[in-house]
Length: 430
Image 1: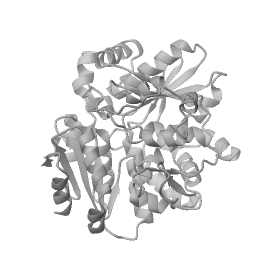
Image 2: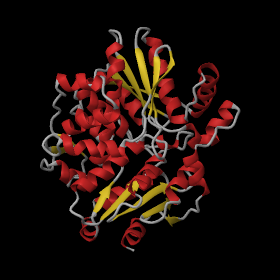
Image 3: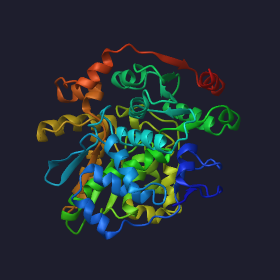
């Protein structure tokens, strides 16, 4: 398997080069040169397999020629040592709960597998992990790499725009983890990180590796959990299974589309966003207009220029009509999101976080138009991480899981940074 740039102006590379580089020399993002479908026998195994076995099958298939099943198995079993349950919420809607890892967010899947893949492929050269986060990515990456030898991590987040719990999880670990509070938006943080990876002089001095979903090591493991839907998809009727994905930087949705391309039996996907809806607008109008992000109650989705949408466009050769065959968009304002958290809790006894609530809303909108279809929405974070939003919505306190309580009790330390690339370089080199 070779990996090519979305911009098609860089030569194909093996996975190990794409893993450590993050971005291609032409500034594009790596994605598979080809999509070989899973053999029918593998898909049949997946239908009755547990998470670790699914991860071994899918991971080995995606990295054919790069890693053996015997090598992939221990990586996946060590990384994915927590449950990812599929919970029925209503007669036609299920939640894929991705919030049971160490930091109680879906980012644990990609970050923990990536950390182990880097260790598997590295030659011992010290790594500098540089990542921008709008919320849960930072805490997942920090936890996954905390204490890993020969690595140091800089997590950039928009100051005052993440929840108290999210900041605690990033800024209280210390050691090889440096939390960086940037006086700007997530897009500013992401811009600084992109500038660093395009800086040849800096990369001569430190071995930079990204840890958000622009890196294949973070993105590809997310393909794994979509195959947990294979058993449910099998029982779906002729209209097929629709999957609603809360979308910010669009890595999660990209992983789902890759899963479909290699054989996941689902009908299609919904790109569910908050008012930062540049992709739903593109799907409707054909006009793509990135813009400054707007702050909402679903902060991990406050992205006005989603990096991974470049990958999605490349997957479809920028053919909008083909993209629309697999993908529709939906967007919701804060008032609807908060109201739906309360309504679903009262009527179904199910507690949503703001991001999951957006995916749920989008799925309900679709199911209302397709009376025979069934659907799954991705519940990407534990509601307790967003108590500021969830508790007023349901009118009662949300119990704090022990891992979050422990993080909140630890002292915090963040470096403060203005939106100034030279200041970031000084920090990385210090």
